[in-house]
Length: 257
Ligand code: KIV
Image (cartoon, rainbow, N blue to C red; front, side, top):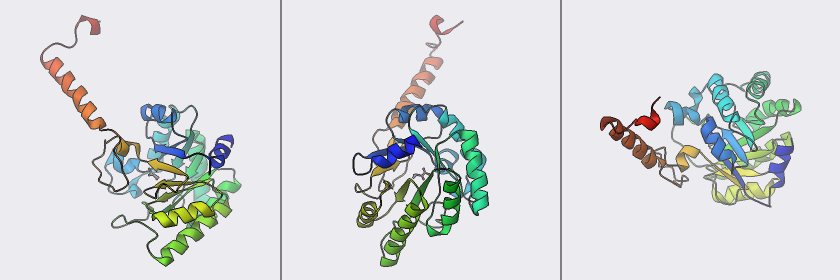
């Protein structure tokens, strides 16, 4: 709970940094800098080439989260509850307990607002910290990914959902692809932090899929800034190894028993 309070206290003071991790090696580096390490169900598209996050299973989330946990020393670890794992409140509680018990994570994240309030309330009543997720909800998208908050109806729904989630006790809310003006209004209205992804600088923090910012994915999403092209380095290492094996330069005595 101390870690959660620390995140909440950052609102209006310092920006919150959140990044995704699906394995130990990535988690170790992210943990050195980020406030929150998120095991996102985006692992479905990033690692498994699934067409939708709906295909991600609870077992996949738990296995990757165990690996991530082994690389974490200080950041708050949040795990996405996969599609269909929180359809009813009892199912949500059973699965959230399983996630917490097996992965030792600090909190879970659920997508949605009013529709999932019963689930959120029951988890919080059972002392399971919850992160909300509003705006573009990948688990609900059937067609194209579109930004949210373009019509008055959408704006009112977003604000209402954010307030309802806050009243239910979530400790922060991810705002995905929400129009700048709307993300700003929501962030100002809430006492808990908003974590934006494609939702402007006005959010209290930012999250990105780590593979995207490292240039590992070929995605051309508007909000993704490639901070480095890691593929180039992977290519370099693999090419060097290949060349040294073929020219018998590797392994020398130093690398042999
Ligand atoms: O699944 C995920 O990685 C996420 C973040 C992008 C917010 O939900």
